[in-house]
Image: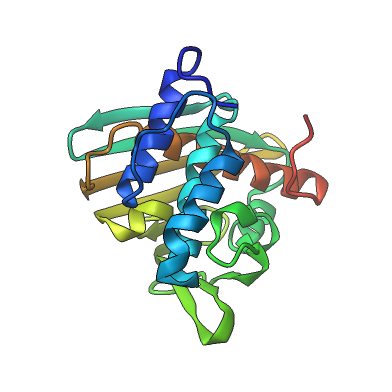
Length: 232
């Protein structure tokens, strides 16, 4: 449950997200995820299944902001028209193994952050100009980002706004840097986002930071254990 008195930032993040998609922001205290999803269905169903998918992805993105933030997650810069995030973690596996998993997002990405509700529909063509894409029913598809740099075992850079940023006048660069460290890999994630965001960026940087922290935690868990679901 979200409580305005106890967690104003989380409620405001949700309100910002819903406002960006045209949903009224009069979210009352203690509104929960199911309540937001029900409202989303009611408001967007009249515009068809496509708009419902967009609303679901936006809500999933914001719900990530309600989770505990892993260590190493940080918004390192924020200005009126953009922000930068940097996160670091250690993965107990060699760089080549980490890179091989990194370019197979269908195996560890959260289905909550897809339009089709299934990470199995994701694919990443790990070469310059390649697509980080998703297939949708009835021949549909989504381009989440384009590969700018692919250096096996060392670096992967994607260009393109993810999730709810896709529908805004925003560009983004998402870089994964891998460095050998002992018998494992130090992974650094850098996400730089800038441009025009309807209603302003508000609490979106924190929401994006939390979502990306949870995402690389899933990558770490998948590489180390074979399952993308981190153990408590």
